[in-house]
Length: 319
Image 1 (cartoon, rainbow, N blue to C red):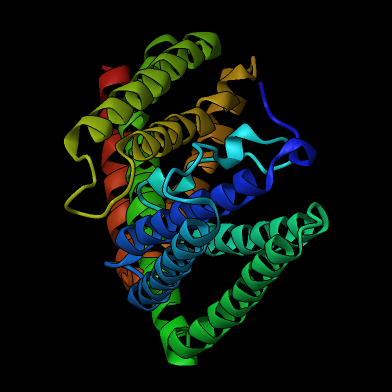
Image 2 (tube, rainbow, N blue to C red):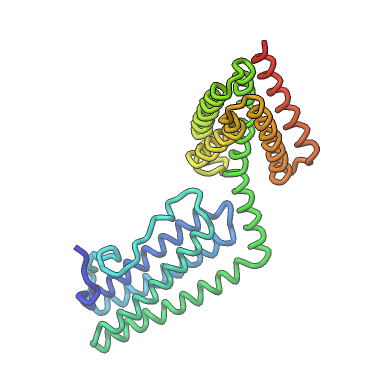
């Protein structure tokens, strides 16, 4: 059962403030640890915010002992109605830097509202003085947080972290997605067109292409998920990479499989070939944009590989 804020005693309000400051300090520490390798400036900001929370907690301890003694009631935010239910984003790896900054701002706003409301709930002069001091500390903390962000997140630091974010996006999304698209677009060419030229039946070619695309997607997804857990390479969650590469592999194969839903075999084949050309052009463009591969070199490698696989399927299917 959650307790209503209005039913809290003065002792419980101060105990809740201690628990909140302690929890916030731990969260800031988790943010710092999670971001240190990729976003060192932001990590240092959270480390100093953690130190501020430790100072606030220690002062609250001293205030509590002076007024209420040594035993602190066990009460936390989750025991009181009205507090925001927080998702444990600090446990997620890799942790998004914008997610951490946004949650820190929410934590500061929630703490400010707590102290403002707590002051209105008591009538004892000494307790009101105590809570006003807590409110002042929180306002100082908010100002300190802004100063720390301005101190550490300079223009150069933000530029460096933006480049780091782009590098992580490249490692965690673009690379597995491109690998999947290439595998799906190129490797399924042979079975699809082999079935098409062997049977001259659009529906048979479609079924073979659908099976090859989905099977390749499942295979690539599991292979990627089991190959690297991301703890050392920084490539992110293996399951996310697996879903990305599996989905893109299936999409790459489905692209030139869908035209074989056209009943006329010759029309379906022509449309499928056109789709293949668009797929190869897209792959070359992505390699050029994200992998710093010269456009002509990327186009040559992708097109030559695609043609070789297509010819393999055509020769086998026509034999």
